[in-house]
Amino acid sequence: GTAPDLAGRHVLVTSGGTREPLDPVRYLGNRSSGRQGHALAATAAARGAEVTLIAAGVEVPDPAGVTVRRVGTAAELRAAVLEAAPAADAVVMAAAVADFRPAHYATGKIKKRDGVEPDPIPLVRNPDILAEISARRARPGQVVVGFAAETDDVLANGRAKLARKGCDLLVVNEVGAEKVFGSDHNEAVVLGADGSRTPVPHGPKEDLADVVWDLVRDRLADARG
Ligand code: C5P
Image (cartoon, rainbow, N blue to C red; front, side, top):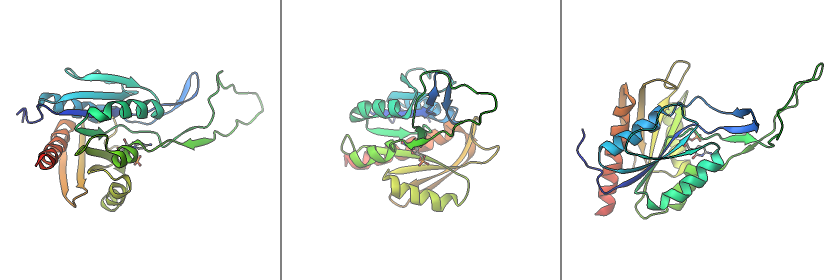
């Protein structure tokens, strides 16, 4: 629906996928299109929320009526999230954040040499932003939502991840060769830290976004008392 049930709320959404540079022309990236995050931002705005969207490496146009900040790496995304989080009633981490980044950045383009095998690319861990903001809660009663893409044991892995991350809600997508990435549709189950389980049938990413905002709205109302 388009009832302004998020009026007076400020929400922060991350979208897309981070890009971790290797040299001036290459990066380690992922296949996240930004469509789900953008659908979340657009539906929240349509429901009356003030929306800040942090977009990493997205190819889709900015949604209307939303404040957009563009970032590249996980470190940039983290800085933008930490800066915006204190003002947010809810944080929805839809972006695919790289778990690892190249340990070294080559300031010049890495070249191939005849007859010489390439060097391996050492990686280091990126900080887990979702776990960090879930533990910290920049604002009392803030609702934190994570996303997870799983290929097998979707529910068991989702429950374990929800507990590990410490967020309030985890949207679990089943991904496979032809599923989800770059598609206009999604099928998911939303797990709650309170034990709730909300299946979302295959449908447009806007429908999943509306279910997420319904669950967030209910939790914000509960916290308000
Ligand atoms: O651990 P995994 O990457 O499957 O978790 C996905 C969720 O965690 C997403 O909500 C993503 O935005 C978030 N995440 C994060 N920082 C990372 C990795 C993932 O915030 N370094």
